[in-house]
Image (tube, rainbow, N blue to C red; front, side, top):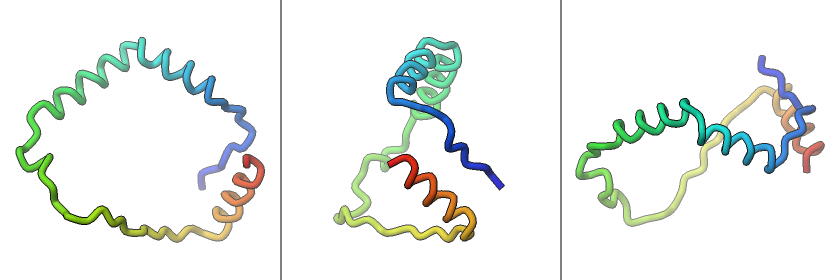
Length: 79
């Protein structure tokens, strides 16, 4: 059971600061190199149109009542 921490004070500004720090880190360079290498040779069909429709399909997930109540409580507190 994962506990939802609803006491964390997070702002968009703190997110931006963390993101800037990440972009200057060795971890970012390592991740960037990994993904650049991973996507260097994409197959030709990758960019081809696979459908004429932009219609989406709904996904439904069932969760336990206890977790649902915790999520609803969190949402109400952070509106």
